[in-house]
Length: 405
Image (cartoon, rainbow, N blue to C red; front, side, top):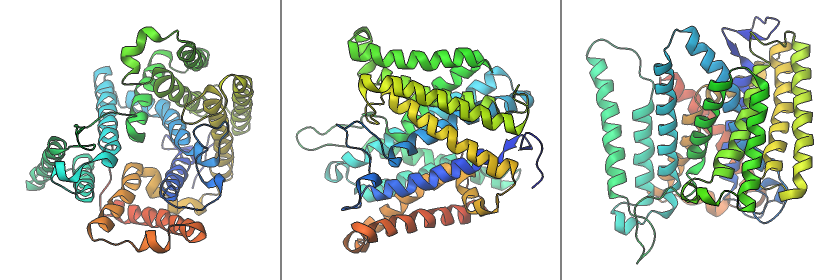
């Protein structure tokens, strides 16, 4: 690979794609590991009532951080393609809506009532995820009859999603209800944070000072929520937790945006050496801020405390600095080829395990839970499944199945 002084090629930073691929791989692994019993505590989320964090607690914020890193690059690329403000915001709002919609669908799987719905959970899951592929697949450009075939496939997907939502009934008697937003699901939380993160960058551009101000405000929102100062916003908090789902997660995305600004082609940080120093100094700043906040509310993922957000952002900054040095500066990237499909096609890689388990449920296959559901065999199972999902993502990507929101 040819490298420039800034480590850029065709307006892309390879280390960001690798970071995204690593995060997706780890996310698949820890999601599967959540169903494994009798494993060490460091392989699980920290208990909800405890202060502290394991590496598992850094996976979701790592993806938020990467979303933040991608915002300046994506916005600048769209401006270079002469897209209007309307076109840019049309894309942003559609992407946000898609993420939130998928998040709500996914978070409601667990409470589906098969008898009331008239469909088993596994069949509902399978049809839902297959519809997602039909709707959000990037179909090849076509001018002949294939164009109408692709439009038809999208229409089938949309209609199926509508039917699945219409027939959905969740909960237990006598409280059978329709879908609930609840905590919005992982994709939904990413959608909300992405929207407010993009808004933050849109109004501040590459000005780091106001972006740090936004991070500070997000921490103040948390304090305001804990002290009752945000009581007047309870009508919003009943549906979307301002201090956490907006403030806390937004601070992680903005941290990724700030770091990314130092790595863009027009950054004032010109050399690779200075870029790496910039990442390390920024990580140190975040770690110190987290340390100062820790005595107030502790470190807690479920509560999205300021210290947790800042510590995770610091860790991500250091990881990225290392990847940038290894891949974009030293050119050592062959080891990462197996991550390329997940980095380029993350949504598909993320939903494939759900499709896999839906199929196992439909066919009544229980061998994984019976023989590989605990201890070391369970950990090995999760590793194998994560790698298998990356391999399947590579195969499907080769055959033009690539999802994009």
